[in-house]
Length: 362
Image 1 (tube, rainbow, N blue to C red):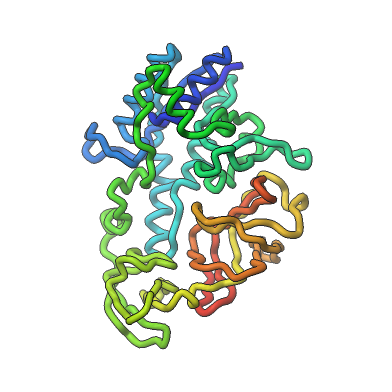
Image 2: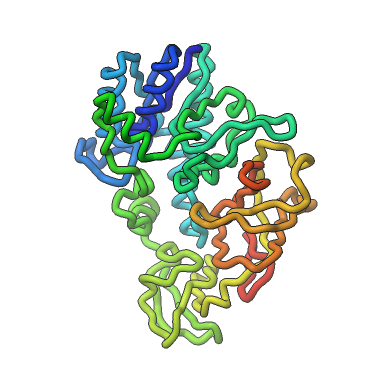
């Protein structure tokens, strides 16, 4: 078959292209330029992706494999669908995941259309597996569970899943690196990206301020409502945060709520983070909800375990999830991703904590 491989410049996409080429397919490498480097610099930045140096690595891997390489400038699309909503969400006291929109709309959306226009299918280096579930093609967790990326893929369009190839889903990361080294691919020992591509130093607050101006200052209060400090903007905090708060109350203290109207940062003990009922909007499903089981597993952060829950869709079209046991640190703007065991069903963006000490709905 003819297949377009999304080349990020990392070891995973490099080996994806290698494996498909070895299987005899006609492979085309495509890189998307998304977040620009500062001043067009080619400076190396460990822990990020989608920079100019990554494009260079991707091109050289394609040269080594003897396959065509194309680069697409998607910066304008990226800004509109990923960056601008990221800034807006932080200013509104939410904790967005820009990689979701990037995967759903750009990498597995626009790139799918590019592949289709070439009469090709699409492959990526994500750690997930394409499986059948009740007559539907969907995704499941990979063999190397420590590399699981299904949380970030819950919004993949079902028609994309039908044409999607994930060669790394049955492999372990150390073996992927060994394959790359054996074939002399320059990316074999390249560090994994772990920061947001446009926040290379991890300081998202600085990015928000640079893009949209300074945030209003406000109060930080303890569980009783007493003011304990001032802060320089709610965009500097997220629900469940303990480090970097700058306040000592004699016990472990967490950020329990953020109020974008009053600019109030609510602090409290761990018990103040408990919540049993949440809502999510912008529901995306790979498997239609009528085929979901009554009891599901719901993952509310990329590194959390899925927790047992029941669900319903309310009259506003929101997914309402009730956990069988209380969960902690539900941050608005994160994703609630739904599973049946290891099988990915769909999910949505959390827009409400419906109970607990500090309920909030946006």
